[in-house]
Image (cartoon, rainbow, N blue to C red; front, side, top):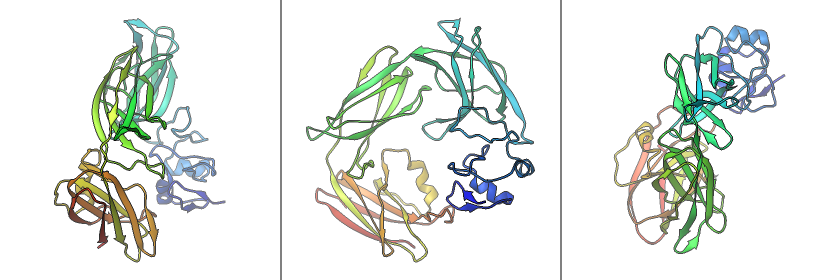
Length: 352
């Protein structure tokens, strides 16, 4: 029986090692259920041979159950206490996992409940760097990196909130509000309603980077982002109103190669010199860079657009993107410097 892989391809019975590794969503995880996203139909014997987790059913970070490390990989014990005001807290939830990406999204590998003395332990923690966080109703610790050795104390704090309104040219705007914690707060995302108002509850005290982007007709973000910083205090709701600038539209028409079905498209503020896709990566989480997230392809020509682009000089960059995952790791970039004024404009480029 064949089942879907995480890449969308088909993996048959008794896959070879390369096929299994390509199909596993997470390096420590696979699934027994062939209907689940990321599933690999592989027998327990085959899993043992390939060094996958030894205790079927193999479980992922979508389920709140422990994940044993792959066979042959060493593990360690991460232990500590959960405290509030110096006193131990029993019955608190503690999660351990990988803090992924710029936003430090927690990919939870294991979850425990503290004892009456506030103690907890993860006996099968990976040797690589992991993060831990604890919470109870109305309180949470910060997301912190577990020490290489020795115990760790997680201090619970009262949660706060952020609320406000988003406008453009005096009118309310439907927009996405994204928070990235700078002091151990977890990543949170919300959308404003038709009246432009939004609210994010359950925030750990500390500083946050707030990014606000308008949402277009296709329900995707498409506007010049506003990036600011706010400070959250426990037990209080911080007010934060945002005004988005009104700009123009830059339409992009791309001639694809015969063996391509899409492309990466970026609009970077200012004049930059770039030859390879990897040179753009440092800009991905910067407000000076935007990527196209609404693509339409027909007859080997792709169209997209950037909305609310403010007047100024920009560098428009495109590179190959094969949806099948078969494109080169660091494709060449075609770029053009454009001057944006008040009127909409169209730019045509061709992939190399």
